[in-house]
Length: 178
Image 1: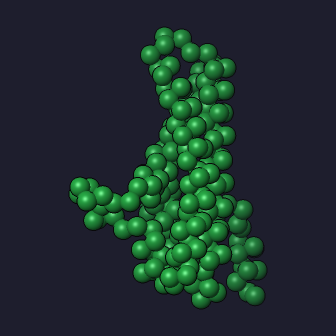
Image 2: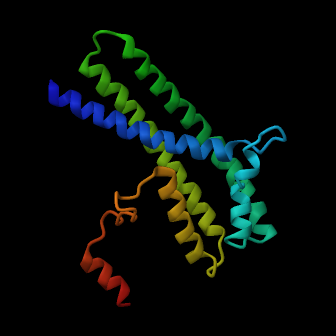
């Protein structure tokens, strides 16, 4: 019972950290800056990033706006459902007894929604990458990887990014020797 509780607390902590990072990203991209928003001047829009750093053309930016609208139409309900599932879970903090079964079901529900959100974000970034010219793709790839690491705070303790999963030294050497 104690091991199950430790595992559940660990899972909840990981999900909470990941969701906070996604929330920060979504709140930054969700609303256009308003005149009375004092922080809006410090936070450039993602379309400005694409225009200035990746050198998107006006046609690419217009296509990006269409992709972004479709993305938010799909992502917003997932995000809202995930927040509702978390609210439901954390509402029970005040209960003196919470069953392990409830915790497992609640965290599984949150994890499923997190999975949906990550899949949606992957598709969104892939669609944005598909807008890039062959010359823009390497720059997009490197800058977006840094952006995603910052969103998820997935740097190692020494400040270096983690190695991608599923990569071993043999696979890396065969890729570089081509």
